[in-house]
Amino acid sequence: MSQGRRPVRTYHHNSNYRDNRSALFTGAQSSGSSPAQLRTNSTKYPTNAHLDLESQNDDKIEGLTGKVKLLKEITLSIGESVKESNSLINSMSDEYSRTGDYLGGSINRLKTLATIQSNQFYVYFAFILFMMFIFLYFIFIR
Image (cartoon, rainbow, N blue to C red; front, side, top):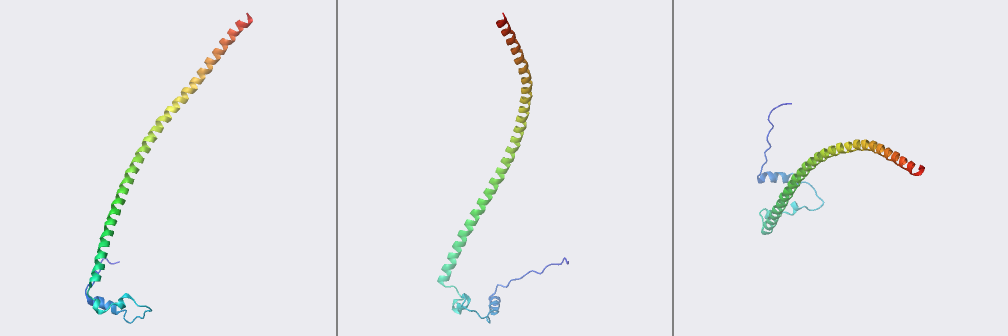
């Protein structure tokens, strides 16, 4: 591939260029009438109705431009809000993870304590049963 410069396109903005383009289609047959065929030489220059329509178009373009700018601002603010929400969710997730680890450690310690306490409970329960047995023995036997 060559690394040379590309030619720059030039656009002709004169009326001869437009006339040459429209001359390409003069021999074409059409089944109906088009707005270009209805145009006569007297409508080359804008009329008051044409100027009114152009001003209405300009007003509508300005209105649409304002609406597009408003939509762009809303979209950007929504994007910022989403970024802030995502960072908040990520920080909350980290905090919940740390809290879960802390609670998991506490629950493991409680389980260990419960198993130790249950062993001690069985010892105390056996001791109380033994004492009741001795007490009942002395009451009923004597």
